[in-house]
Amino acid sequence: MLYILMGQSCTGKSTVADQMKALYKAEVFAGKDFMRMAKNENEAWNIFYKILENAAIDKNPESMVIYVITEKEHLNKISELKDLKKIKFTASLEVIKSRFAQRMRGNLPLSVEKKLETQFKEWELEECDLIIDTTEDTNVEELIDSIRR
Image 1 (cartoon, helix red, strand yellow):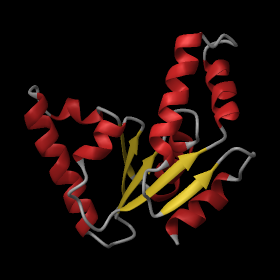
Image 2 (cartoon, rainbow, N blue to C red):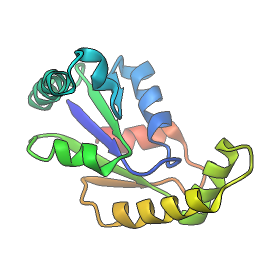
Image 3 (tube, one colour):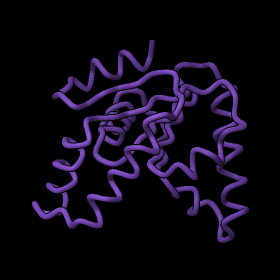
Image 4 (cartoon, helix red, strand yellow):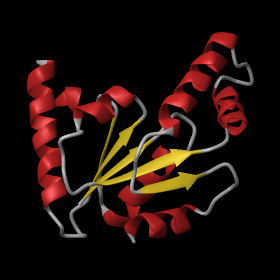
């Protein structure tokens, strides 16, 4: 099984992925983790893409691969894959800014704020199989149940 947890930063993707890893012994990749698979980026990507492709084909619920995507360019690179489950994580823009500011010790520079606004718009229309809005505090176990359905 292949799950794509996608969306901008501070929406809960990594939190859910970490919990799914613990519960189901899922293999979790994020961003450019694939770069560790080979010295050459193209070779590393080809190896990683084969892992994703095999996971998408494998319908065994005991065999789970999760790819956490924050950058749209990474999502575009897997557009040819079939039989995957794309889950888009979102939250209100103000909540995302607040969470990001916490990561930056309370200071959110204007340039970062503008980048978050741009990312919010970019992700808004992205198609998916399930949307998870984490604006309000959410129960991670309930989110995982909705993903697994």
